[in-house]
Amino acid sequence: MQIEYLLYQKLHLPLEGITKRPNSMTMEKWDVLDRIALCLIRLSHFSYVAFNIVNKKATVDFMVALTKMYEKPSASNKVFLMKKVIQYEDVRQHFNDRAHK
Image 1 (cartoon, rainbow, N blue to C red):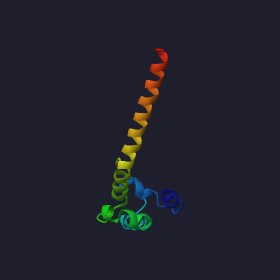
Image 2: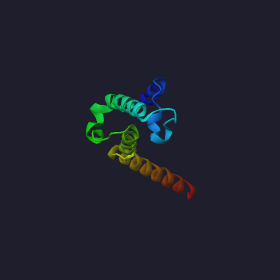
Image 3: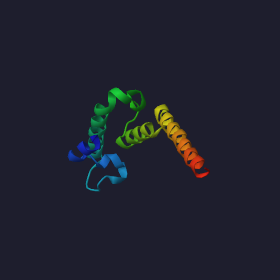
Image 4: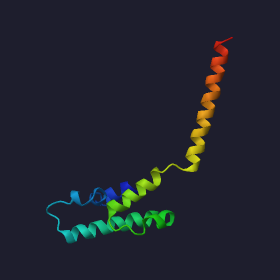
């Protein structure tokens, strides 16, 4: 949802990095736009991820750090998947037992 807010504020260009800077935009204006986008994202996430993002200076670097952080498998994800595998084994065994009767 925060990305949608950035789009409404016309701050989507810094999300893709400096290669998306329009030729008509000066570097000073680009730096200001990048800083505004970075500050808005930091404000919306700061209390949750401050220790992971405090050293990021560009919006694109910040987004890469957030992506890596949220894509990491968590312990709860692993437990969930293990339960699914065990349930699958139980169901498979049940059908195999019924097929052999």
